[in-house]
Image (cartoon, rainbow, N blue to C red):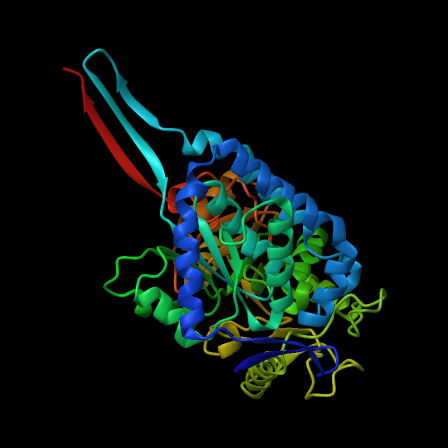
Length: 458
């Protein structure tokens, strides 16, 4: 039997392994989900909401365990306490707006006609979840999908297999039937087969551009909706009127937190020339204050990257940039031996958009900083990317932020903050970041289809 091993970035040891389902077993799981979906959708909406809220409470009962397990699986320091804060916020908001979003839109209810649009579930939703925020990204779809009456099959990333186990345990303990929410371990070929042979009805994928392309290719001709959130190269722009200290603190945290492994992490910063030297000086000091080390140590502020191959790519981008004339401001930290998962966070200046570190997704603790003369130059540089997830603008002028935001090709515009998902706002992207509508009221539109009723009374 084929197995998949989870290698801990802490020390390179095998943390756990799981058997991979055969193709036949995976299709049986999908058939069970399809059979269970009809009765699940017939349950009262309030009942489905309450079961999801109960699962949320159960997840919240083991946050210390969550933090330790995440440290072992993907390297986040235990001092940050896991992901329940954001997880809980998202579940509760999606539960709160469910009745409004899923109620029929009645156009006419008269003696002559009943005309209305209902939202009905797709059926079986396949969630292919990533490892970098393994609880929060998964729940973005799982919670509204179940509430809307879909059944869910979760395929979690091999780097965070245990998270899939924990989510399944919580939902089943809460009373969600096992066939309604299933956590399975399958390979890429079986995933593609489930999609291509229409064993599922909707796909949500968060991951790489290549992975998203594979999902869409598997779905080609099936008419199965594929929602994707892929790469990012998110910019920050610091205007001349910005609060410099706040900008440095927040943007650098947005670049370095989680070892830079954030979908909406800041990877490039453009600073008005009048503030540029001060910003760089403060940014370097901020990074030098970080402690890179074992994530199980409460003093550690930055742990290892999740996998050595990710660390290798980050080191390669930095080395290429320096060879091409960039300046690296942070000396190699003690935990970084140049080969392991512990990567020194880096601030680069003298960078250009000819360098991969300013074009390709780094997904690591590196930020390039460039000076700009005005808003127009900043907009041009921010848009000079094949990605479009978020952009962060630092200014005291809200009108200017909105005006600039209107010109940026992105899914979300932030002013004076970054690296945050507001569950009331749509989480979406453009260009190679993919397409989809996660969270907010729009998530229910994505996870259901409209069904019209034109009933004439005679």
